[in-house]
Image (tube, rainbow over all chains, first blue to last red; front, side, top):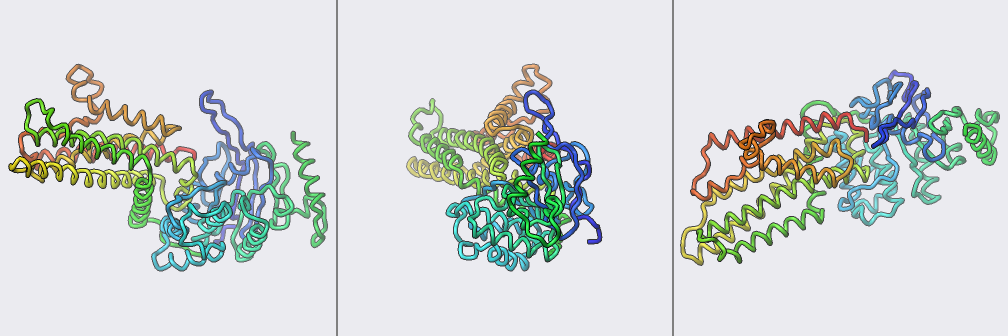
Length: 254
Length: 262
């Protein structure tokens, strides 16, 4: 794909209409953000800061109130854009009576994978997510972490160019989180663009090429973790400094 | 990077089939489905026990009327309640994201959901019609006379299936703009009642209901009474009427759902 930006949010703003009163509540106040292919962007911020709204808009589930959301130049709500993305929602729940493999076959079919392609891809993502042994067990018997890994597997089943992950480490144990970070880095190195929301600052700083700190729907800071902290490239980041900066930014905004 | 062909009628048809299969699988696992199926079967069985209260009519006619009534009631309730529950279950569990973030169109989800509910209703009507036929055959054998003609019964069940699926389409349309399963179920049932009374209401001077579907059209128990299959022309007309209203409600549902924020 020749387009220079995998993700483009241009003056992106989103307001939700309150049911009953009809008042429009701003969720995202309007910001511009661009991400080149093969980069990992971490969206950081407290609950209600607009992380999930931004990811949903990029997944084409929400329409911006103002501005634009584009995936490789395609409007985010177009079929062309959806063909390029894989999306992991926050707290997903899948049909408990399906097996993990059955669910992935269903997802693969919806992504128009051919029957010849489907089997190998399902096996590959089951192995990638560490669910190969549990593949033929019912989802009802899966632990929270296994369901989260299944969610990750369905998001990357069709080898999307852009992965949108809403709190991908949620429900994973420390080992699972480390493995996830490694796997996501491998994908990014292979050219996949990843946007993820996270609460764990240090892990996000280690994994992501760029960080965007959101507060009350505003983009407070954006850049590499080193640039945000004023650390020279190659130098080790101090987690405490990052946390301090994050809290400072949020308190200044409030 | 995989770039499968996701455009075109064939790809859309495949996705609709998958959504319909998934909907059917979800529906048969619902307790509500089992409950309504059992309720209808029990009511049908009760027709056998209550045949003495036939008000002087023929026993077999009473059993078939009562049985078809149970079938129609169960089918209508199933269509409204299961459609609403399945739709909002997808929204509340975020399972709908799995479908809507893939390269299909939102109308495919609506058509797939409707087709899945229609398949569930077909299964419901097939099983319970067989039960009714069994009851009628047993009683006919006991009485030593001829049973009810299969073709008439199948035709009547088919018409009731058309009616129930139309209720399902109305409920799905309501669900696309409503915010809760309870509201959707209640309004779906209310719209079904309005449809059932449409012809009567029009006769009573409520002309503004003219455009609303007349669900009583599909109540073909009368054909059983006279022992005649409806004419082919009449059946084609009823089918056309059904197609037009199902297309209208699914079209409206798809139009609203396209704009709905999930």
